Length: 184
Image (cartoon, rainbow, N blue to C red; front, top):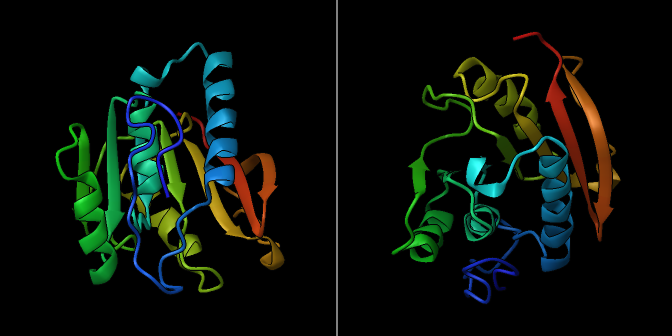
């Protein structure tokens, strides 16, 4: 797997074998980042204005892709030991990308990010538990774009506190693009 666009285009991303880490496919990443770029342009934002959190980061492909496209700062949240080994290798030598070796269910306090991307292991209720935890820790405000990657067979929906902006599928995955409902 390689980074598909930006100044790190072609960078090889290593991921562990097996089903514990499922890197988002090139095709799906391209779709997500095309949507993000379009949404940012409509808001008058450019990639250097963006902070990006890659939660349940795995190999870090989504965070590194955001960095490659010019995101100001990227946070990769991961705590699974094997994934961490690969993630550390994949981000070695890169600037403005931070590895947070912690549980996504108990994140440290943080200021709001522009994009919060979650690709939790499917069917375990982890993103549903992590989303309010990140909100409570300050990572989310009503400007944060939230993207949930899930298995399309699960037909998952967002909690009532979030509004679906759009839903897209690529391969076996569904991506839910959402914003928080509460006022700032």
